[in-house]
Length: 145
Image (cartoon, rainbow, N blue to C red; front, side, top):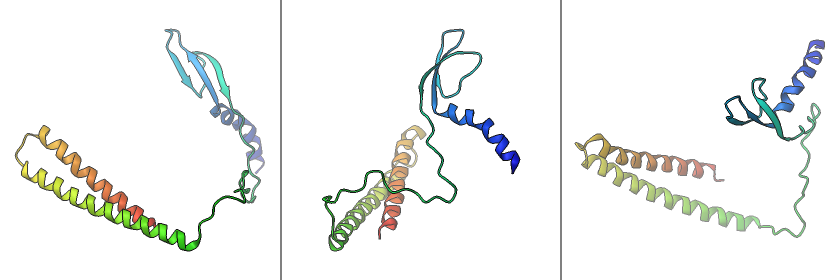
């Protein structure tokens, strides 16, 4: 345990370096912007941000520094359920449209069957795009309450 306290001061300069931005120029005049100062280059500090204090062990997270104002508009539970229902309907419609577009793209790819590879790649890309969109929509629908 004592060794950990001895090593900690040695690591602090590395943590501070991560919050410092340097402008370094090498012998050939090439400029590099980095957060790591190197010995072989001429470096100047552009900015330095101090690290925030570390939270104490077992400390609970603090409340927001800017609390919600008292006159901030609130939404009733029924209104939120209605909005969630509208959102689900919109996502379902988008999913149906993407499924139709995927089928059209697959048909176009199938119909182009013996075309050269450079002609087929855009069709494959379109199929992959619709598949990713469907996956994202299903994930979004799964996240709804």
